[in-house]
Length: 437
Image 1 (spheres, helix red, strand yellow):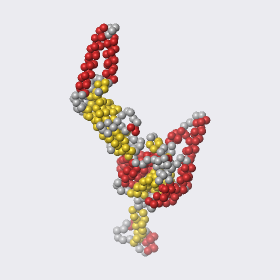
Image 2: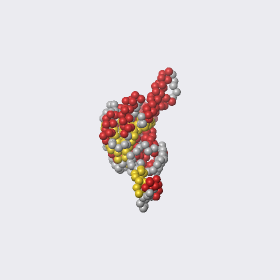
Image 3: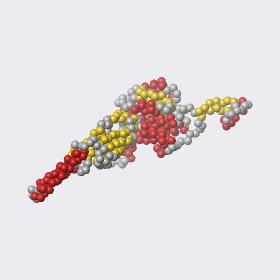
Image 4: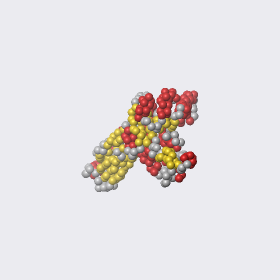
């Protein structure tokens, strides 16, 4: 049982009235009457609140949360009292959110229920633990509050952004991907690959007749086409210390994981095969490229527990294992972050080796805050120096793009928030230009 602020305000008023009775006698009587009424009111509310259990609460939410997205949590409160109750609901959310505002006020009528809804946006993958639900109920004047504690301990796993996948899926079904910034790219050529020339037999499509071959053979010859082969698309994610940098509360690794999932989803819808590779000081995860129905679930399970390390990534080990595991020419989408031209130059021989055997797309990141600082006016000599340094970093990012292009390596320099959209557009562009083959 708790005495509310209203009780202490009324008690203060009673004390002041009684004290004023020493100077004006009638107020002393008024004060005693007020005190009597206050005691009666408190005892009545205690009896009303403790006559039965009264309030029950339960939490409902998904068993899995989507990283970087708003996830809905609902609190259902049932009032079994035969009168209206005012409630204050406090949900013990996972401590990692560091929020103290998960407290909601509501009024529940007699023998009715209410639902409180709020949203949580996790920024890290892992297991998040909810605690109890504490409901504070008051009746009548609200002088006394009773706490009802509902044991609702619950562990929620935070997975890579599967809500983003659902949005892409729904928009793709309605052909509205342009709403997310996905460009519609017309592909040049046929949807089939040439296989061979053979003699015409009844039933062959006359549009496939090869007139030059027919003239040479003095017989009708037709071109035979086979369905276009699926291409292997591998998301190669660097888990080294360069991916620990955070933007808007999420690390570059989490941005890369979310983008890899979306790219794999789109690739499978385009009839390509999607696979996954992660590495840091050693070659870590390898999921062979496939387009079966359960491939996305396998990929999500592989990415769920991935974390960055503090070591230097080993590109030599990556190249060695790529030669061992991938025999067919594939598109390798490498998510990493080069801070300057020197760090890229150290890895350039390995990037060249990968680009020689595969189509290599290197994805690295722009610093949005740095961009905003460069665009802001300089004030004072020290500020000019800082602008020069920031512009130097910006120039080196552009220089990295140019150097990679000169070595036959494709690149994508993007802001983290725009990564998913930009990587899909780049994939569709490469596919339309028939570079992935």
